[in-house]
Length: 378
Image (cartoon, rainbow, N blue to C red; front, side):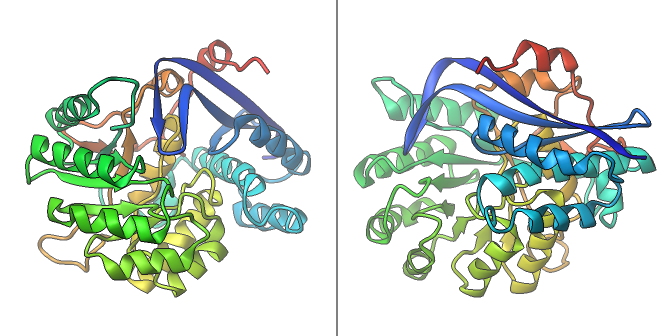
């Protein structure tokens, strides 16, 4: 089996209502889907997280080397591509492009061998993965607390046992939002917060101290990703666990995070940090350091499927016991028309949990009509 073509599909869809996190507003969602074709008719699918059109250009460039290669040599191809672009892309869009390709190659490998990816990575630790709801973004409405509480209750009623709230809009505003949502959902539902690195360590600590009584599961990206000392300062000052990593790349980048003990939970995005190949290595490194692994997921069903396949083989956060604390899947509940339409059978939680797909590769089928319907107009 040889690779015959690598395609980059840039997709976009307008939103019915814009939403914001701490640094920008979204009026549309964009996705970049990788398709790797072979001479025996098998196709592998991957996804890149990041600027879609730039990622597409990177994937097309990397694809010129892949044509004619054996797609089952995932480790060789990863290192060869990384080495060819090391001078220009140890982090950022080159690794994001490599990530989408790597996921597609793992999908191909699973299809060629007739096995789901989690079987090829050691076999499942679990057959279902508990999901937490990501949402609770800022919208242009007069009463922020009211709609945040409404959305939080919707997630709770769907069976989610944990959810994540966007903060980073000023300490006083964040404190009001956190306490309002906590009061609405009650003490039994997990609540995490995500500042998307809107603060420095001083403001992050001020916020954390004012909400420590709200039983926050983790404080995500309290400071910019490159500020490891800031992460460590926030971690030392608060009882709230610190999470970070969606803006970090490869096991080399995460090595520094782990060695500095700068976070309690690391969150590589498989569509950005190096794909499934690197994601498994990063998860193993986290286990060696006693740090929790909870991948960032904010893409289509392809990204969700990749995260579920890896989470199926990641050990529990706590050592084996009668009641282990299990790793969680981030499940985006914000509007995303492409995510909803791209898979022939969408991945959806039932009572807050996602069943691990048992089909070969990622265990999904892409709807090619969606690739046409949502094709971006440059």
